[in-house]
Length: 231
Image 1 (tube, one colour):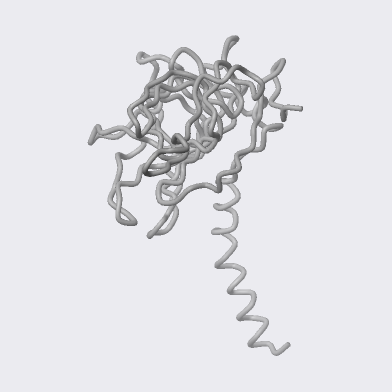
Image 2: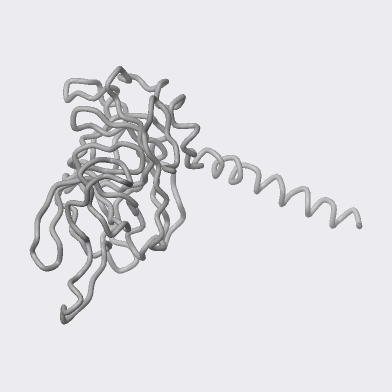
């Protein structure tokens, strides 16, 4: 390799290093990493559920969504997520990973602009707490359950009837409000395209606001302070 090529390669690597390092800090945690990360958060206490899912901000406040140091409206504000912006032909909200919940609050980390048409940008490294009612997502699992477990009783099938004129699946369901989470499950109020309403535990939260996430969601259940795959 010539001296010129070596210098060119070295310069390219030097320029790429910050981007690589920054990308690494956006890495989403795996289930086994969640307990330790959640326990280090300010405001973490007994009774906090461990969660493993992605969501996005659905707050209409032009000032953005406050991120607090503890799950309380009186806790100090430690960050702010901007309101939605026009991108990819729709309104896009910042996305983040949810790793815990308690009393109507969600513990989040790695809030970013995903970058559907623009460069990705880290907004808040975290962790911190936001009100559960200010987040949204679509769902991929076709069953709404009574508890956050795969073998729990089914409350509603999130698919259209076989004789429906236009078919639809779980990603067409409207999430009216999120309440809390456990593992990969989120307790929500929802409404189906045919007007049925229900409250229950949905699995397969998808934060992609432009397309679907694949339709084959992984399930993780919370057991004895750990997140495990159901048997």
